[in-house]
Length: 476
Ligand code: CTP
Image (cartoon, rainbow, N blue to C red):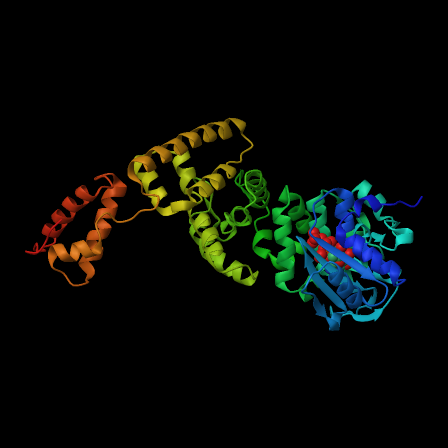
């Protein structure tokens, strides 16, 4: 039975394209992700239209009728694109592609709709809806993509080995769609991915990471990452994460599997946030556990300093993975460095000064750090988890109370360098730093309040102690 989806194609872009296609006696189709998402009821902002013939011509005619001024033409690729309202519309001539094994660059020729569907990655991405008036909205589904959508299966239109070798990025895409849509990857496909995982080497890091980040942003992300691990795709670009896997047992003492723990933390935090970089902090929080692992006869396994080494590993990992090296990296680095601090408070005795120090160091990222810390509380022992979570609430209350009183979250020195210079008649010198840092320490320790008068008084005391003379011009 042929299906018709004309009622889904109410957007003016389709109406206009249909008029032109019909007038000119052309064959054109909406194809790919847009059709898939339409049927799944997912929002989509990119429309792909494939024309048997010249895509550029149709794009220009549609744009003119829609009064769109700017059309980007890519002659060499035979594609054209414009933006209409909030939609990005791309036109392409139907193509037949063949690939050589040593390159991603395909040899491209004009082709039929069937050729174009053959070269696509998955059956669910090869669905096409006709735009010609006589068949408007008819579904062309040569590979059973509709059935796969219903059965929630990722399957390639051709032999999986061929589809993946044509473009190895598709192995990442298979996992990404499986994770985003909560679909299964067909067994034959999964085997082909495992066999061909090493071919990811010809794909640029940026494209790999685009897919990986989509997996990280899917819910729950662990499903996709477990698939990457099982197929050994993860081994190709993220060996540090792979190294987290495994349990060692000595003298009856075992440590937890840090790979699965990390995934648990990532899933936990993903329930609270869509912030990609906070999710990355979860991925990396224990990344230095393997290189810091030691066995101590008395206490068992230790990972001393893994938070500091982990923070130092962050820039290297970001650089290699072509992730941004700006404030986003710094943010992840900071959270990795501080991730044990709230936990230490939760498990131990909470003093005001420890809370103040934490606020001071975390600054505006304190809430995110607390989310990470909360997500990090995983244990098979429910009683332990309950107790930690309860303590955790106490720490949060304390954080609020201390911040209200002392305002150290965005700490500004209550005594400025200028005032110190004026008071003691100094030129810029080392002593100014010493005084400022001792005042800061006194506030964090709770010896004085974060208050200009108290800080001024302390400044005079410190000055006297280190042998500075008060200037005649000094005034408060
Ligand atoms: N495609 C492909 N092989 C690739 C990339 C894309 O066959 N490596 C085809 C698929 O038919 C896909 C279409 O090109 O549906 C558009 O690709 P893209 O915009 O990257 O993905 P979408 O499927 O639209 O999904 P999303 O918007 O979620 O990225």
